[in-house]
Length: 112
Length: 112
Image 1 (cartoon, rainbow over the protein chains, first blue to last red):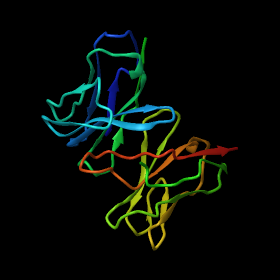
Image 2: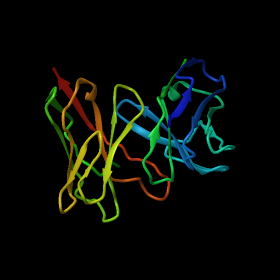
Image 3: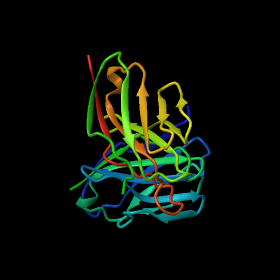
Image 4: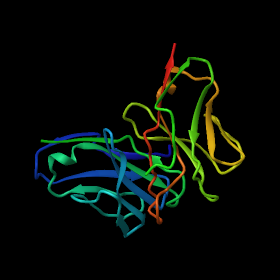
């Protein structure tokens, strides 16, 4: 089944404790992206990747890192999480950057 | 900023057609109209898209006016599981970021 998976789905952590949210797709998509969703602010793009080893900042990249060492994986790294990064995170992928995007199920993060 | 205008909320009786309007008066000639939906806090789900012709798939129909300034998403026989926020999107944002610009969407409540 074609899908985008994210892990973990739920995470509670403390300020400053590094964490990684994984994202994987099995559709051989070149384009992948991370969004965060906050009440009243909608979905905002954090980082995106056009292909392996090609990543770039979205609208709200501060406090986040990404890597794209393999086509299928696009992990989101929070080196030193802070409470303002408490949010619902979505990974998405598409064949190319302006094609239909397929979203993962979301990761709900709470930073204390 | 979102380039679409949608009603904040709508109700529909179960089994009836749900018609969700969207205004996009500033759409440019090469921009597609995309519809996604988000059920509770799940990942947004692609529904349908079109350029200028009407489109139909197994989920819905998309009617685009001749001047392309507005469109209507039609769910032919709404069920309770169609209760969701529906987003009409006509822009990927500037540059080749692949960023989908989500507005506030229409909350569709399907009632028994």
